Image (cartoon, rainbow, N blue to C red):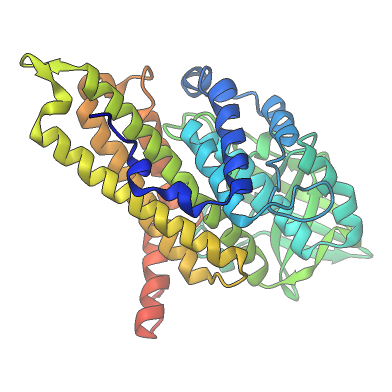
Length: 389
């Protein structure tokens, strides 16, 4: 019999509208032609042509694609999720470039910024001719961003920022950074051009994960900004957390892209590999592994599409995004590791994408909220008790 694809077995395409499928297919074609032939080299060398890719992704219409106006495509949330899935099937670093650009930097300005800030930055960010980053995490404050030490103080009519941010995707190549800081009135966001005096973004190197991605510190040493640099409509932690929720939604789909690519790779490998004079695919233990991974991938896809439907209806709640992020990343990394076993020693090389995806997913497991944080979010919802401390 002719084999089916794992998601074909679930018939998930029947749950996706025609326009959303068209966007998914366009991104899949881009990844096949522009990312797959080069990504192993980008990963090995730790260098990706970010600016070139950003412009191409802008031409494709995926930068800030789920936002309206200012040159953004205004697609459905589901289309954005599916685009993230296809991008991460190429590499998490490419999806992270788009997620940080659209769901963190652009979303912060779009949701919380002034009209002047929107007009200045959003069209260029949507085109990919400018790159944005998002400065929230600090060396000692990840899961507890409310403890941040970065400070913004008033001097005359200006703001002066001092502090350090850590693990910032796109930081070293960004033209603009959305930076969150403590002020006398609480946490506020600031739109910081990266050519401002006192701003620097030293790159973080020697990474074993997300190597095809730029990761940096942000150092703010007396960065002076006009009063108009502050995001007027974001006060307190709700501002940055609203942005993180957008990025986590993309991860719900994105992680499945990495898992699907691993499973597709393993399926192709076991059909060709012979062991003890027959195909590795014909052994019961092999099929048991493949069946279990197919079930988890399909379940994750059904969950992602359901959350996309809720988001498109304006009904998605943050704790539901936690459900998706916790489940889909956890299952994706399990699938990547299991696929590695089916490839044997070949699975540890860059000739195949499996170990690369597994390494990348180690980062996805803990960024945009660790699995433990999402467990506690869900635990609070089902018990009525907060257990974060």
